[in-house]
Image (cartoon, rainbow, N blue to C red; front, side, top):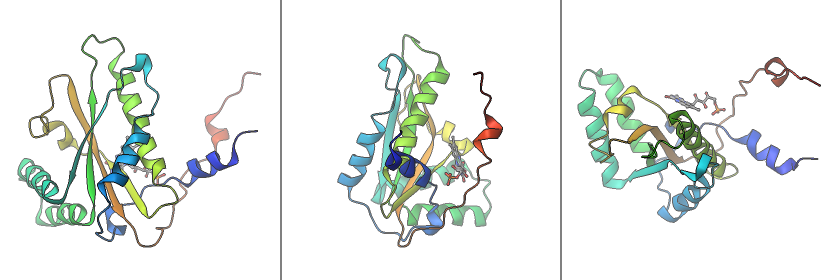
Length: 185
Ligand SMILES: Cc1cc2nc3c(=O)[nH]c(=O)nc-3n(C[C@H](O)[C@H](O)[C@H](O)COP(=O)(O)O)c2cc1C
């Protein structure tokens, strides 16, 4: 038998979008606990490629202004939506990937391992009033200098983290696993 609680937690994980955040701040220490879980993601040859750059309070405003500057062609509506997402979020975690300098594993494995660390961030929010989602805008790739990323590092998007007052309704949008499975008994 597999552990039913683990299944329940995995199946309870879902995206919570800033529109459902109430603007409250999460203590850094709690964010650190979440990040410690991210650090337990599996990683081929233990390269541990994930790198998190965390913005809150005044640094969030600097990040927003950089993103707005990079996207000068954004409509006023889009700018306001972005500003609102930033205002309502407590922490914005820039999810970055550090490519092993000796290329001991292919890049896709480093991205996969980083994505698994994001899954751990997400799962850490289950059963709490903290929620989040991973946003992967095109401009993430243009933030290297702002984020002080080295040549072998890149930003894979933002994990918006915030407090939600009531549990936002989960939308189940999965087709059955049977349709994605082929058994060779
Ligand atoms: C690699 C990755 C990139 C994503 N990028 C975005 C994004 O740019 N914008 C967005 O609204 N959601 C993004 N998401 C969140 C998905 O839309 C979300 O996980 C999906 O709708 C399923 O919902 P659930 O997380 O509640 O199960 C991303 C998810 C993943 C795994």
